[in-house]
Every structure is written in C-alpha cells, then in structure tokens.
Length: 283
Image (cartoon, rainbow, N blue to C red):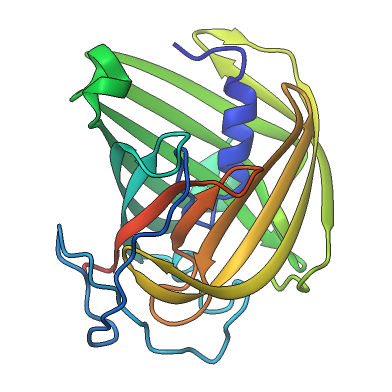
C-alpha cells in the first residue's frame, strides 16, 4: 500500500525523470580494474569494468543524454545495498523507453519516459519473508522543455508485489524541475519550489509544498559496470514529508551511455545502489 510518504517518493522520482535514477542503501567499492573494449556491454555476472568512448561533452547538460531522444531504450542492472554499504539486499533491472506526443492531465505533446523496474529481494537474512520476492514497478514521467528548463508535470506509478497491485498519480503545481536548466552550471545551487498532489487508492492526499536544491559537479566514478566520467548530483529536499533529506546520484557524463544511472548514496555518502550493467538500444 502507498503510505503517507508516497508524495515525497513520487516527487523524488520526478526530480530524476531524465537521470535514470537508482535506489537502495550502502558503501564500499569492490570494483575490479581490468578494462575491456570501450562500448562493449557487461554480461550478467561479469564485473569487468567498461571505459566508454569519451564524448564531446563530459558534463551535466542534457546534450547527448540518451534518454532525451525519442525512440531510445536503455537497461540498467544494479545492486541495492543494506545500510552497511556492502551487503546486497536486492537486485534491480530497469528498462526505460522514451517517446513524444504523450498526454497527462490535459497537457498534450509531452515527452514520456516509461520505466519498468523489477526488484528481486535477494537477502533472506535481512529481508525476512520478503527474501526471494519480486516487485515490479511501472512508472511514467511526463515533461517538456520550456526555454532552458525541463518542466516535469507529473508521473504515474504502479506496483505489483505478491499478487497485489497499487497505483498512484502525482502532479506538480506549477511544475517541478529535474534540478536545474538543461545546461546547468557546475557547483551552482539551483532552487525550485513547488507543490505535489498525489492521488492513490481513490483518495487525493493534501498538497505538499516542497523545495529542492540541486547542485552539479563532475568526477570520475568506478562502479561494477565500469569506470566512467560522471555527473554528480546533490539534491536536498525540504518541506512536506521530508526535512533536510539529502541524497546523491552519479550519472554517466559522456559517451553512448550519457545520462544513465551509475551510483547513489545517502546524506552520509554511503553507497545505496550501483549499476552492474548498462545497455542502450540493446547494446
């Protein structure tokens, strides 16, 4: 069932509509260092890193982001970690597809990112009766670029878990940013304030006013999927159901995988999830 924190969760998802965000909990880097041919995908179970072919832009702009091109697909396999930052408690496979001409709450001609996320709870010792269970989440994010900002209008989420399906829809007033302009300056905080309204279980929850502060920087990151130039995104969300909720995400900053999720961490910098495999258009 969606709890009273649904709005905050949906809002966080909307803020990373084009960042192919991951999730989870914890820290420790066990990545190997042997390179393979740039651009080759990592096969399941293969932890050999990939060093992608550098692109013209190694930054945080949408330029070259594979998930901003209609018709593109992507797949991100990832580990989710316990709070110790080392114990894997779940594995995830996210399949994304982009399209245009979508409609949402009376708005038409919107850009749509569809994401199907399959989460397998793999650690019985930690997950208890959920160990071995699978949750499938289908999410649709609706946005458009207005001026130099991508405006996120809302999203729908459907969860299938242990035979039960729950759904919710969230929309924003006036709209939510994904963080900053389509070409954000580095090390510059971008502040966006908006209200989030969530409809779940036939009930419309009270609108929650929230403010997000997003800061971008670049660095090299090594995860199980490989070593990549990365855009590091720090997001602090205040108001509503959250107070000073800080999180970090790293996305590929150049090459054929630009914009795809690499790693996430909590406010203490502890790794919560990392990519084990990246694919774009099946490769």
